[in-house]
Image (tube, rainbow, N blue to C red; front, side, top):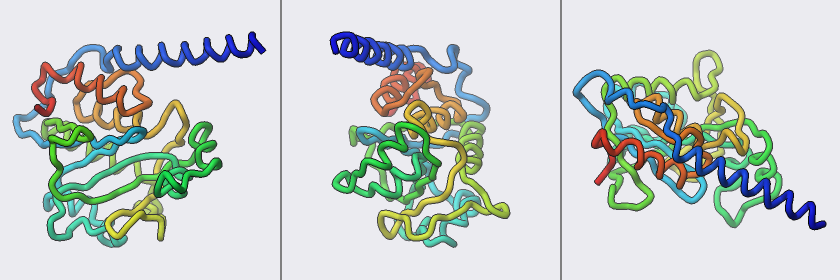
Length: 230
């Protein structure tokens, strides 16, 4: 029993060390600068204790690119909508846990092992940067285009159209789609967010499995570029 307990403590200590190193070691190791173009777009990372989403500003071009959202009943062109909010995650956990009170063992087990992926899309009006759950970053025109491409390629497509999951939304403004990749404890929603931010020209930690890790690394390695929200 004591050996098993000591072994468990060593595993937990190893995970803690890896998590700290994953936060403190930047990715990429060296800054590549702000990217091409002087025009910038303000994007947001929205966090809760276990998950992060990316919010992008809506304009005519964005609505045209993601026009399938309106076709599937997501009011991307609704009055007062200023942002589209994208999040990648485990399909079972996403669809079967709309609230914490509905948490079940099966989706948690799948999230810790291997699960299919899903993309959650919602809309938002103004996003207050004073909210501690919100962090804003400016990206270049080239970085913004690369981010949009990354998000679009994260959707699983059927006949060149993202595969909508009918009846799976949490409310009247959101919806779910099948997504590329597989979800597990090592490659999860926050590592997807981190990868998207790196594609956009920002720096993250080497491995960011949790929101606190991602947010801390973003603060550490993007401050010199004056893109951290005040």
